[in-house]
Image (cartoon, rainbow, N blue to C red; front, side, top):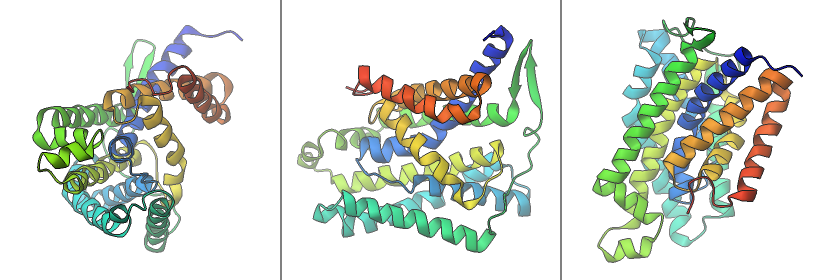
Length: 291
């Protein structure tokens, strides 16, 4: 098969942009699952909820989707706090965080999806923004703005989260609770309180990820299912609890999917991407940046 250099370069660039979006979708799971060991399989449902929130604000008030995602960050943070309180009181405090806890989040996933279907139906919804249609042309490389903007937003989000975790007391406490909650408790800090902030933060990121998603493509309530496997794959491949590893893994997954879809067809891209995940873990079981 003859490979065109122009086509290959465009596929790699598209993969980088796609990987940036995957990072935005996965960063919340990197916090909840990677740092807190909470298998929140309902995370993609909150992303879709963020998409529909951006859709409502864009359609009714003309608010830019990214601005809409930023506006609702506090509301999603409070939503995450409420969900974690229920999870902690009902399951975590009693040590029932494995199968029963997973069923709890599966129930939230189902309720969120059915609720969105009852309100909005099964039709695809989309938003209007000046950067959704145009593309930047750099030589023979095309940069669609509908992919570039979410990628840049994702990089800014991950950079701010990395600074927050590494430079603030709460951030360092979140990192500490993922390593030794008992030692943190001896220092007078309640692990459940730290987890509350961290889990709420993970849900808040879903609002911004959802606004990025509806910029890239129209959404419908069950679309989140398509991202459950990818989100877990990115977090595991990057290394549990590592935001930088998660970003590298997301980029790698995006590039592999893009190249595969370009030269062999879209139907092959998920299989090859997850094959790449298995190959990575075979040689690096702890993930790319895992310890």
